[in-house]
Length: 501
Image (cartoon, rainbow, N blue to C red; front, side):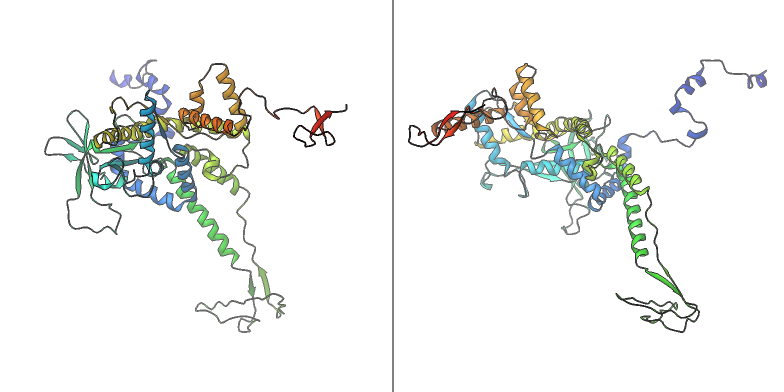
């Protein structure tokens, strides 16, 4: 009976029928060889992280498209800086906090190479190349002469070893260099004392790593999976395609260069008879004859000249490059024209649609990563340090509320966008604060500057068209033309007479 059961048709609705509905789960015919391992992202990062990081850094340095994409990513993510706007209700205290912060930004870099907003750009580049960056909060002594005794030190991803996965003597788990307590909280980072690839930093023999408490370190990365503990390079999905495209371009360029070196080939019936300009033969018996402008060569009977006609790259080369770079741009999540600089096939509508989607993605990173992981913790530690050092007399808890303003977006047609914002304010769909902050500026700072400008203009007797209620174009249309024979009250001839129809 069991033999006949083998040939029976399975009942409809069984496990086999349910599995057949999930095409991606089929294991027959064309999908038989697709058997990826079911691994956690942390296991993938731990095993392939160092090689992925090394290849990513080399690609950004040597590949023009990758380098351009990296700069475009950083420029759009942070621009000239994600800046704070304090929400303190006390105007005097708010101005004091803002001025002290602005002065401290010039001293924020522990290496003294840039300011706080320059550090933001460096963090953005590291996120593109390495997928993560570490910022160490370095307290300073009072005698160091800083306005607020606090500085920031950037550490690359290589400083935290991927291979350091063990159990600490205190019972905590160390995973990819990060120490977690028994309930999964980060308590420390085990950094290398020097960069493993820096041969110029030769120090005395010291322990390989040093334990730094987690409250002194900011780990900036974009988590793409739940439970992810280390970052992945933003360029990772496009790395292989960029590398192979670079090799193909190099091979094509080398082929064209080699073919262009040969102007022609000469065949002779008597190889012992030299031609005009012919040099000595090499070890293989091949000789080279050079030509000069205006040369007329007389060939002997039986000799022939065939000129080189190297093959072109073909009509499909441009289309192949475009499609490949289009796939690279999609893998990077960047618009095609930002990666390649090619806007030949773009127009106003396509550029705007592309930029709207791209800036929506950038907005996620600005608020969910840069502001949350980098700016807010630094602002909180800076306030505490400023109060403890006496540079600021305020309650750090009361002074903590702040809003981080990302850089403004420059649109293809700014006039239409400004007109739309004005209509939205007049209809009550948005506030003037939101509109001003969308330009990357603090509304209170803008209002103070406007008030100061208006007062200075009034004191000087100047009048400008600054009212938003006035129409576009000229301020007023004259109804007459100057009459030089009729003097004004001051004696100058500039009165007007009615214009003739």
